[in-house]
Length: 189
Image 1 (tube, helix red, strand yellow):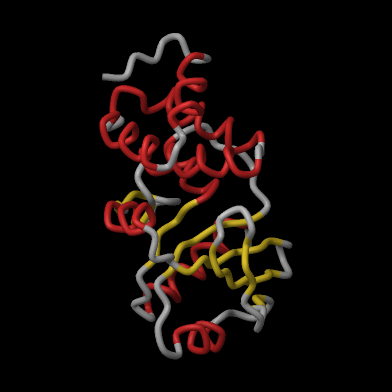
Image 2 (cartoon, helix red, strand yellow):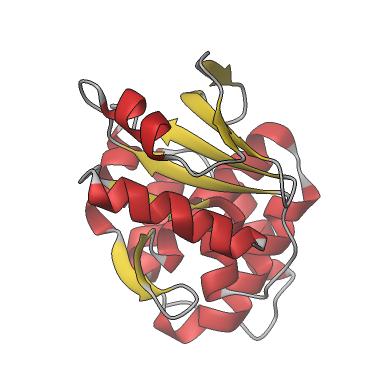
């Protein structure tokens, strides 16, 4: 089983349990930008009741759900970690926060094909905003590069009013303008 097959297996279980979710992180930026290797997959989920217990019970052999939830410092969210033995890979389940931007991006998620299967993925606009936010907080080069790649690939299809509105609300306008200045062919409306 490869990494994407491992993600598909977990998504199949999540869908079977009717847990609302969306694919975020590098898998979502890969869907809209330039594909890059990643050591983990990130999913935002809405958990209730015994969802984690049921998920744990349905995981295939070699998939291990860490019983301890943790707090992720960059995203500021509660996360649950599924470690996979072969291939060595991690799937992180982030609980949907009650923040306005999280609610907005979760409500805007869209079905797109991931390895020929329709999956709920955050929109390209939300990839740009979220990755700019993570870059602002943690200064991770990969987030900067993902934003650049998504904008370069999707520039004429992006809702620039939405991006600019949320960048202003999240105090990311400076980061956005710096990014656009490095991409001279980008001319957002």
